[in-house]
Length: 113
Image (cartoon, rainbow, N blue to C red; front, side):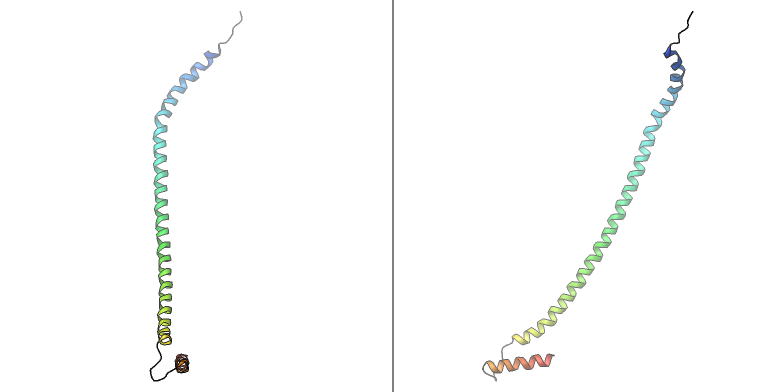
């Protein structure tokens, strides 16, 4: 008599041993997945908050620099407007003609320098 071994007969004990392991994995993997997702998105939200606060600081620094530049330009324009108003003023009535106005402008320019 020749005995042949049934291939399914050798896997039956292994299949029975794997059933509790598979049940345990099906119960714990969703819990682990939820925990990992919560941790990941919690860290991602903290990272975005830090990034937004850093960009806010950069924006404040940029606005401050622009305000300083604008103040310097305004100061330069106001200082030039005083000189320009004197140069553009009408000549005095005592002096007539173009040569008198030109002489007055030259005196004003020399006095300012």
